[in-house]
Structure formats: C-alpha cells, structure tokens
Length: 342
Image (cartoon, rainbow, N blue to C red; front, side):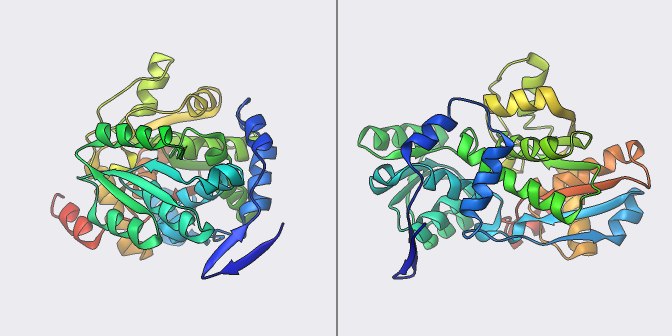
C-alpha cells in the first residue's frame, strides 16, 4: 500500500470495489475485523486501557476502562468511519461522500475526510450540539443544517442522486468491522476479561464487539446498555424485529430511532442482557467518572458504569469487567447542566 503526506492530508490506495461488494453479502466475521485492524490501524489511535482500583472496590469486581474518548474526533466512530470510507473504492471516494448525523459520526466523517482528502458533506439537524457542528466543519467537512433529522436524510438522498456515496453511522458492514477492532485491543490488554458492557445506539458498536470478542473468547459475557428513553435494542429484541422509536434521552449519541439488522441478529444470538438505565443514572455515573477517574465521559459512555451498578450482584471478585468508554464529546456546559439535575 502506497501512502504519501500531501498538504497535511494522507493519500492512500483504497480497497477495491469487489472487496466491499463481497463483504456486504454476509454478516461480519472475525476475519473482517482483523482485516480492518491490519489496514486502518495507521489511521486511528490505540487508546489506553487501565484497571480502576476505585471502581473495582465500588463494584466488587476487577474493573477495566477502555478509553475510546481519547480516539481521534473523540469517539470510537472514527475506527469504523475510516474503514467504511477506505472500503468504498477510489472511484466512489473521488465522487465525494455524504452522511447524516447530529453528533459523533458527523465528527468522525469530518476528521476522516480531512485526513483522506475526500470531499464530504454532512447533513445535520439544526438542533445538533454546536460543538459537533463546529468540530465537523473544523475537521474538513461541509455542513448543511436542516430543520430536523427527517429533512437531513431527505437532503442526503438528494446528494446520493447527484453521485455522492452515502456513509451510514452504524448499519454498514465495514463500519461494524472497524468498530470491532476496539474489541481486539481490549482482549489484548486484558486477556482474562470475563465481562464487557457496551452502550447501544444503532447497534453498530456492539455488533463489532460481539464479532471480535465472541469469536476469540466465546465464554465472555457481553452486556448492552440503553437509556430508558431510547431503548432501541430492547424493543427490537422483545419484538423479534427492528422497531422504530422516538428517542427522548438526554444522551443524543444513544438516540438512534432504530437498530441495524446485523446488530439485532448478533444481539439475539450472543447478548447476555440489555440493561436499561435512566438519564439520572447516567448523569450520576458521569459524575463518578469525573471525580474518581478524572475521565470526561459523555453520557453514552458513562452509561456503562450506570449499568455495572445494576448488575454488580451478578459479578464476583474473580470476574474482570471491561467498561467501554465510547466517547467524550459532551461539552463542559452540558456536564454542568446535567449535574444540576441530580
């Protein structure tokens, strides 16, 4: 693979169209995750992971924190976004990409497009966090603000008709495989891991984690967590099919209106349980993370600690629990406002 740094941007030879076409024909595999790791690891950070003495004592188990909030653009989304963009093929990448997001995926698209020298447009609802809008522009993408998410998706469809390639924030095999690389890192740093808690928005992260971890360590228990005001996976699991909801949680990055089919099928087969937490549970956990770990976790990331509090009686002192701290893009003003709700 050739690579050259030109005007601050890395130009690479991207994967061929035949490879991604084949990938779309089947559910993601461990081979897909390893391929993403081998090809894209030069683009993202290998984030730190440490054992928390304070949280281990609090929960009565050995607690390990995987800190994806230190990833480029502030969340795990960058991993999958790089793999998704590089998997398009050069011709599609040259025609430009378009995405819809109000948060972390928008930031990831902005960052990745800036690094790869790709022309990207992100359609964002006007009520998206100002910090995410500004960061997406600063990273290098063009932002179009629309009245709401419905209008944003409609505008993105117009760009696809004009020739741009659509990027999906979670329901895309390359995105999920790229997300799964964090699972391989967790196992490498903590081979004795027995349990992991992962937050669920659209299901793209937990799909990648299930694929990576269950393929290597089938006995590991994988727990999902969702806000009670955005229970997309819980509703889908109960119904046995994808269900559309109207999320109202304060955690906007866990505000997907539905989950992807692949994520649903993997959770049906391998998920230990979905833990439902309230917004106040997440806010309280966010405060604990700040005070005890000095980690600025967004609500979606703090939800894993909130869930751990609810299942600690199902863990023992011999268990090794990984909390995936998926992102850190809440603003200081957000955190201050949340704290006043307690």
